Amino acid sequence: MTRTLFVVLACAAAALSSASCGGTDKGNAATGGGDTGGGEAGGGDTGGGATSGTGAQPGTGEQFSVDAKGGAFTAEDGFTIEVPPGAVSEETVITIERVEGAPEGAVGPMYVLGPEGRTFDKPITLTLPITVELKAELGENTVLGAYGFTAREGSDDFAPLARHDVSRDSVVTETDRLSSVYPGMILPTSMASEHRYPSALAVDGSFLYFASGGTEDVATGDNNDGFVYRVKPGTTEVEAMIPAEPDPKALWVDDAHVYWASGGDDEPVIPSALRRVDKASLEVETLVEVGYVVSVIGDASALYFGDGYGEKIYTMPLDGGEPVVLAEGAGIPEHLAQDAENVYWTGGAATNKVYKVAKSGGEVTVIAENEAEPAGIAVDAAFVYWANVGDGGVFKAPIAGGQKTLVHQGGSMSGLALRGSTLFSTDTSGNRSVNAHDLESDRTVVLAFGQPVAWRVIAPEGESVYWSNAGDYRYDGHVVSYHAP
Image (cartoon, rainbow, N blue to C red; front, side, top):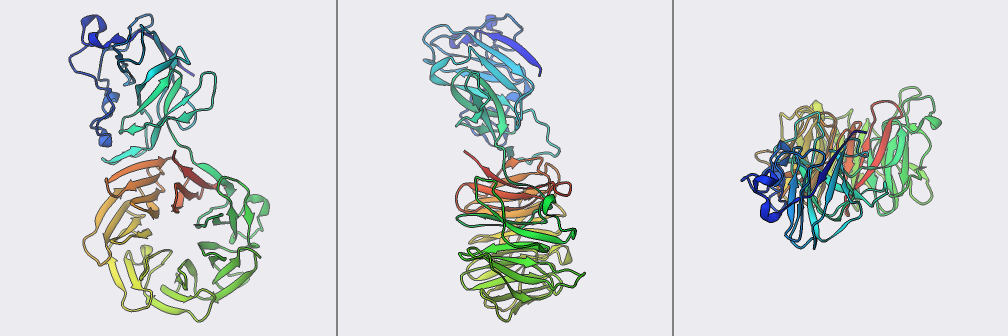
């Protein structure tokens, strides 16, 4: 752990431009009240060495003062302290110790501000430089979901501060006491770990459901076998709802049942099927055996599912019955979405198209074509959204058809989920990130990066987001939750 110690008696506000304080006429680059998007203001340009008050970073033993008039200090690395008028009643010494080895989730250095525990009558503003080097360039309107984290003196229990004005270069935050502080990300919480390639996700008011090949201690010896699990949010108490069966790969839930696509097997021959398990009794039943079922979704009266072998979209009653073909030539429809009237899907690399068809049947509409392996899909009242694996774009187009628009550019986009005006996406290359794109402000926040192959993401009503990390190796997969304060 590398530490650099500064002793600072921050310049009084009235003397910020004086030669004795090493001041400049550039003004205060650390103010945090402006536009925080894209690094144009709100502290976003402080990481480039802009000076304020103290000019160059002071050496050990240099002193600056702050009194009732307030003052400011800016280091060469962009770290800034602003003490407003009235925050202290007498001349006050502030010390700053830069610590390179910050806790997990940090995206910049930690600063120990002293004397630790010293409080202020008004909050002081801190600008914390973001120094993490991402593997791929962030887009123009993309920022890290970073906060200022702090802990009480003598504690390692760090928590995010309320204010978090984020630009591409820094986090502007506030505190009323001196302690350790650093810029960092909210870490996702693991709900299930060491699973073999978890993928499909679903959620209700009580449980998160997921499908995976299981953990190493329940391996059957057949690499095609898998399980449907459930876990209560906030816990790691994972329960298998079904015995091992061939490759469960898609989930949908209603009040009474969990439905899934059973992948089938060759040796012995086990047909692919649409199946369900009763949430209360755990009784399993097969609703239909057909083709190679790769997706399922439903509403109050019917199920809709995709057949990858037959390249069809089917519908059938919730309790089973004869399936009805809604669409043929559907490609490999692994990703489905719906509204009250229509079913939407992506055809994957088989067709490179995005489609819709009425739930009651009728002509299939091609919403977009010549895409680059479209995958995850979502829909709202006006637009269809989809993610491309091949070119890394997340796009939208009007439901009725029309010109597509780029929403977010990533590396290789996979999962997609929509909650209100926020579109969540997963990127399996580049920054390997999970992102939240505000459709109203056109701003993308990286919620997490360095994720080991984030496949699917769901965002139910509320504040939590869930995604499945397939993992880079067998039994390296996780299912996680993310909850911003």
